[in-house]
Structures are given as structure tokens and as C-alpha cells.
Length: 460
Image (tube, rainbow, N blue to C red):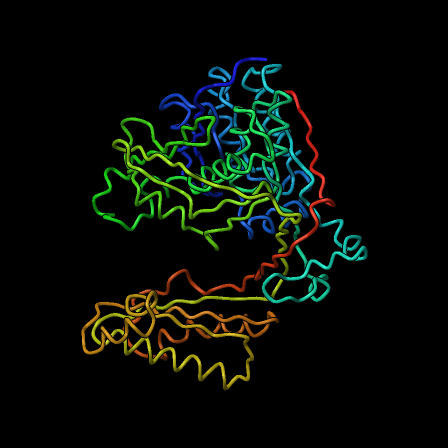
């Protein structure tokens, strides 16, 4: 057995499906890294991928990942960098097959092992699970799943780092998963590299915090950062964050030299509180991290040390992310010009609502925003702009209904306002809006004993 490393570097390459395409290449070429972590999944993403798979059994994964691998695989193989990604979505095997094809095309046949993690997808098991007493009650509303069972589009349990660790231990250089937690993609490499036990709760918590900090990519290195945002240097050249970890659970956040952005305590703190919930109990499948124990220190320019993280044992449950069809929506916009831009937009809103009411259309909700006046801060902003001249205001109005017909009729009532409503429409943004299906989120819990991850190794 080779000796354990003193330091391990895990680089963030993607924070969501659609993130900066240049980031993975820059991370593997900009300096030394041991692992590249690519996070693609969000709750709604799973339902989108499930729809793709239902239309084409060979789809259902983040195709951007395959494009990225085609660009960086020769570098990854040459430098011995391991890749962990939940790009598999609802079809990890197809994703792995696509990456294997790319590897062979690049002349890497026999030089790459791909680990495939499955077992999170519960869609085909739902009826059996409910029949066995797993009600999958909505955590927010306490309603049983049977209330929406006929409209469910996807159902995936959140797996943790354990199957990622097993895939790495079996020699996989690229690990492709389905719904593995964002944090597990970083924790897994640290557990594997340092040999951390699955019940070393403080270490598990430290690795979880490390994963949480870099799971959103450049959001921890100056992107989307409020503190002194105008002084963040060279965002066009932003460096994505890297965890430089030690075996005792302490780690430092850094980025590659000669990159833009900023690694400092305020930026790291902002990312820590992102989607945090109860700071004393950040619950993952791997364990519970107590965020109140985290200690941050600026030890050098663009280098923040994280220490002191304490953890608690994992619960006996796993979270299940379920998406279901909820109805239809549509959003339309009109831009009104000075003078009296806000008054014109407000009048158009009243006219449109009156016409919808006269038609007898029933909506579950109608929501209006006056972009340029009140879209962000609502009535608070309107109090500030009354009496002032606003150059232009965008009327943005959206409707939601269980049935498609009223939503479709709403889309036909926007354009006439250009000529038969208040004056000075300067742009009909995007043309006539189209009804869209609404995918709603159903969070639930399930006994972890009924979810069994499977790990396969595919050779290119």
C-alpha cells in the first residue's frame, strides 16, 4: 500500500449544470491538483433529465460533462488527476459509456477506468416502497406521496461519499454518479486519500464543510459576492476555488496563481451560509456538521484556513428528492418608456387583469413585477420612486394554473396591449410567451437501509 499523502488538493470545476465551460480546463492546467470535482445537479435538474431519458433511453445525463472530458481527458490521464462528478443524473451508465467512447477516440483505450455509482433512482420502486409502509411524506406539508403519485416525474435518494470512496478504491480515475450529494464529491476523495473511517465524525464533518464551500464553484472565490464586490479583481479571469486539505481535517481555500477573483474570509463566509439551514446540524448522508464550530483565518493573500470543525453521527434516514408535475405557467413582459413609465406599466397591469377577469379565466396565482422600480424590493422600492422620473419600466406578469387553457389564453392577451393599452411600449420582449409545465419539489425521508448503492467499473 502506498503511503498516505500529506496534502490533497481538490479543485472545483463546475458549480451547476451550465457553469463556465472554461473552468475545468483552467483547473487542471493552472497548477497542481489531485482531484477535480464537478457538481451538476439540482432538484429540478433531475426531473429535466428524467424527461430526456423517457424520450431517449440513451440520454438523461449532463452532456456538457462529456464535452468537458473530451477536452481534458488527455491532461487528466497524463497527470494522474482523479475526477468525481454527479453528471450521471438519472442515467450514469449511459454517461460513463459516452465518456469511454471519448477516451477511445482520444487514443486512451486501456488507460482509463470509470467508476459508475447507481442505486439512488427510486422512481420504479416507489409503489413497492409505499406498499411496504414508506409513505415518503412531504417534509414541509406532511402530505403523503399518494396525493401526487400519478404526477411524479423523478425520485432520487441522496447518496453520500461512501460509494465514491469505493469506486476510487477499485481504481476508478473518473467517478460518475447519479444523485450523490454535492459535498460527497469532495468528501469522497478526502476519505479515500487519507483513509478516514466512515465514523470519524469530526473528519467527516470537516470534509463535508470543504465540499460545501467549493460546491458552487466561483461563488467561494469572488463570484456573486456582496462584500466590496466592486473591488474584486479581474472577475473575467476568475479562479475557481481549491481545497488544500490535511489528514487532520484542517484545510485551506486557495486558487491558482495569476487568476482573478478573491479568496478571503467574507467570501468563504457567504458561501458557508448558502443553503445552510440550522448551523448546528448541517445534515448529509455521511454525517452531521456543526457549522458553529468552524474557524476561519486569513493566513495569506487568497488563502483562508478552515479548522475546528466538529461533527455528529449520521442519521438513519436519507433525503429523497421527488419532482412532480404541478400545472402550467407563463410569463410575459412589456417595456414602457418615459415619461410616466411606472404609471403606464401599472395601468397596463390593471387593464390586463381586468380583461382576464372579464374572460372568466381562473388562475391559481397572478404575479406582477415592475422591473426597474419594484421587482427586487417590492413595495419598499415603490415608496422610493414615487414622484421621480424612471427612464423605463418593464412590466413582467406571470400566471399559474392547474390547466393549460387559461394559461394559453393569457399569452394571447399580452400583445394587444401594445396598441390598445397605455402608450410608449418600447419592446415586446421575446415575443408572445408560451405556456410551460411546472415541476414542483417534494422533499421526503426514507430509511437508509432500503437504498443500496451499486458501483461498477467500466474500462475505456
